[in-house]
Image (tube, rainbow, N blue to C red):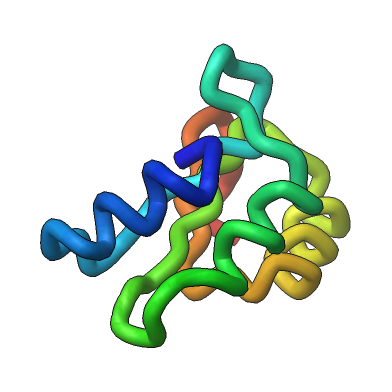
Length: 80
């Protein structure tokens, strides 16, 4: 999700989770934009942060700042 309008439309049509891509991608969203979008969502919508080979401290910082519910990792991250 990259904008508030799409997020609210998805929630309106029944989405119960929305993903926010923080990895380098055409769909990448800034932490600040994600935080603003997330603030507008109904409480039943879970938020997912998508990361690829990101520094663990940066992941923690973004997750806390945005209020992410779920973290999804794609890359060479270890289980630890």
